[in-house]
Length: 76
Image 1 (cartoon, helix red, strand yellow):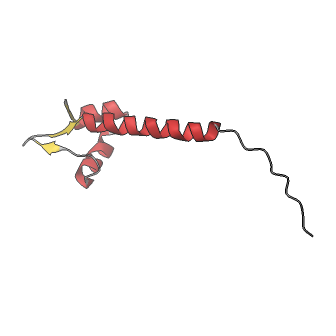
Image 2 (cartoon, helix red, strand yellow):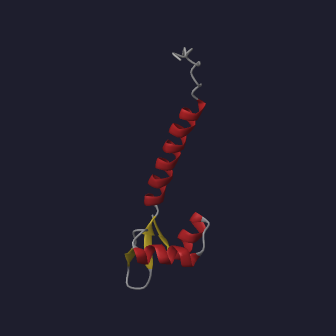
Image 3 (cartoon, helix red, strand yellow):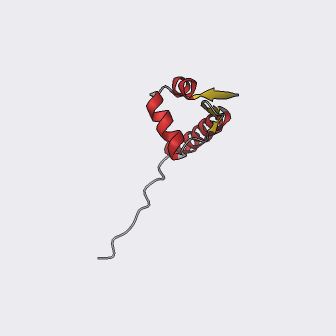
């Protein structure tokens, strides 16, 4: 499904000017149909899935218990 810049801004909850800037900079892939830029919604779905997967990995790392302190003897 393709979205206009206005619809994309509403979907991402950001300002239209930011979306337009990202499109012109190439940070968001878009197709110019002769009148408007249209943006494939799937690229955001994939991005959000990757972010969620990364968030889970980080949370699993943070939830890992700290190992017991090894009794290190001073040699001094």
